[in-house]
Length: 468
Image (spheres, helix red, strand yellow):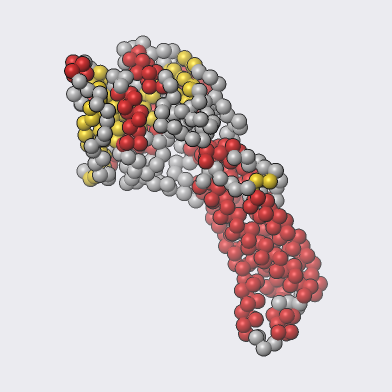
């Protein structure tokens, strides 16, 4: 066995609770460390056979157990023993992860909790938040040792579709409209996935959900900005019923966010407090589920808020592939960048002959004017668009920061679109002048520039730069 995380022992828990440190073996022999939080005192000691629950983190590398301490304390005060653990960092990163591996980690935690004093091994379940909503059902489908499943902010969509929706929802909440959010953002995610930089993009959770036989409690905040809260629950219900499982309870909480914490501003800000009634629901429902009285097909709570539906994000076609897009970027950088570089080199060689440089070195006034527009405009658009889109998706989700907006369009994006149009116009003018009067020495250099400008048109359309 090998250890992938340092022990985060010594959790500061309230006096009415007790914390015990544990270590267990996860997937691949990785040793993970956690804490079991239980009710303290004589009454708790006398109560043998209490239920227990393992909490599974949402997305994030090496997340420490105290990230879920608030939930653990709240659930322990409902009479449960709660195991929280430090999430692995080995084999998990922004570009690499395996839900199967994470599920095996969770199963290691379940085995450990079932052996704890005072815990009834037949009453141990699993709780998954966000990404954990993919992990927990997978673990439950693999083990009869799990007696119930609780999901919070869980997603029944493919990860790439969910992430694309979440970032788009954040951008729309910030006021963004038009091609940038409708076309450019999902296009970038498809390219990232095709390049292998988005882990498990097309993982299909529905067959796994259909194989879950344990009672399921699904909880969603009405103002979830990371999981489509209106679309996901019906998919869960359909998949569970397809597998013959009608022991599910879905509950929506008002004024609550993705993690079912209170939110004062529609899901953007997460307060430390859990939604009122959330912990009590978990306590009462676990009692019913572990005594064989789990409610059947029960859905309660206010209607969730979801402004836009998610959109399918299919795998890239060959011409959309990351390799093809990368080749186009290289072409643009070389062709658009070569024009000023060659001009500078000629200027350096001919410092003493300014007039000859003006015509022979730059190709004559009629050609140079359009050529310089194509070169500078195309280079700025290609580099600027890549940087801005990358920035937008990295700061996307519920805290999107697109910058100043004009008629719902980011000002930076509008400027890039205007420059893209100018580049297309410049390409047409340069092509006409090149064919009519370009000096022999300039034909190859300007011809390459024109060819790149022609390729730039479908590329800019594809990325939404020439769309409203």
